[in-house]
Length: 200
Image 1: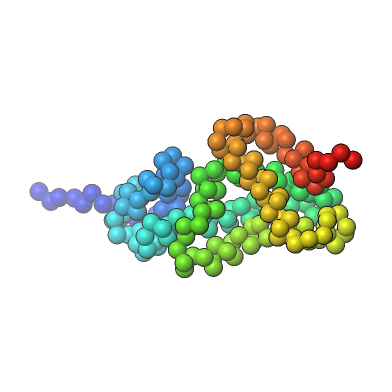
Image 2 (image 1 turned 90 degrees about the vertical axis):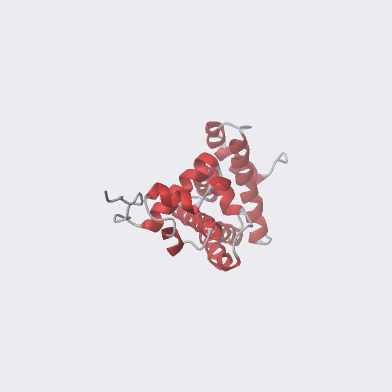
């Protein structure tokens, strides 16, 4: 009797994309610690060595997931941006888009902001961060030129805005704040961010 191999050849689609999809599913359901290239190969139906053609090791896979997350965030922010709007509603739309991404992808967002990346991934990830979040720096710099925002380093001002949004996302992820309440309050949050809490 001829024994059939239990490993199914992968003849459809894009193996790299399939591995990333499976890895993100595991990240969501079990966390980064549960990720295994061998287990992903089994799920996809390829030999345990096949993922090595795309990812040198588990950290390379995690870095690729983080990079994919930044690319998706870039597309989401670009789609939400309305340059013709006045500053406050424009920032509100961008803030809502960022918060929506963070609420939908808490595990991925945490991975994106971790510092445990391979040295060879730093340049790619830094460029991805600049593409996704650098547009907010540009928005702030332009608003400064129009006198709508105080003068100062746009990077530092953007850090204040990012910390506010990221902090709200962290409260949602921890269960301290309902996602619906966070999204419903984004306009007020942006208003307070732009005008401060001091009485006028």
